[in-house]
Length: 301
Image 1 (cartoon, rainbow, N blue to C red):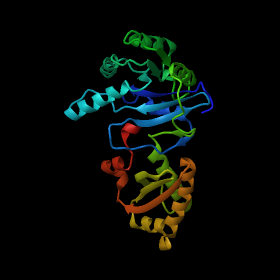
Image 2: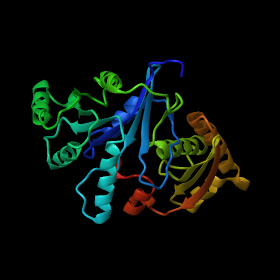
Image 3: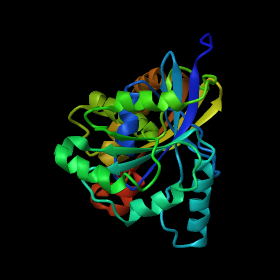
């Protein structure tokens, strides 16, 4: 790194479900997503998004959810999350401007009282409230913690997001650029890859295959520094659809795989080894268990 004043740091995002953490990350990393991230089966932090400029790099991480534990395992996970909060350079606590401060927020605030690093209060969804309502929300939280800053934003519309990033960078230490300029994001990786595959299916089969086809990315792992191995299953409802997708001597499936692989390689900036299978699951669209398994989870929306 040529810039001696370059700043870098790790920033944890915490908050109740549905406060807009994913929306904020998508806004921050924009379209430049290099989708691979480490999926080690440990309590290590998962990288969610990386924001890089010529002056700084912020690595956003997602801690295991801070919630009221109902079991020993739950208690362990919360303790892991809390310990990781002291290993980052800053913490963003996100709240929803359309909701009053509640028990879930209080639980998180109590846990943040032991954090030594700067803690920012990020009030999201300001596009959905009147200015007077926003003042009421701020007053509910103002004295809860010694906030580094209180930053009202709209992750969806982009209001004040750049200003928020600049405030965070101001408090970061000087340091190296940990990751290349291409951003990394964890949340949409499998979703984006499955959508690229599904797009090719719809392009190549046109009327023969209805839009009720699902793609389940079952495995996505890095074989080495330059190659990513992806295994995906295409789900259809009828055996005739399976026949169309496979094609004579596997020709259609090969064509789908080739076109999808080219797009995925452009997205990842890496070579990709893509394996595709086709599976018939009658009436999958009406089965809750199937919808969950194929990634259609209510919690994601």
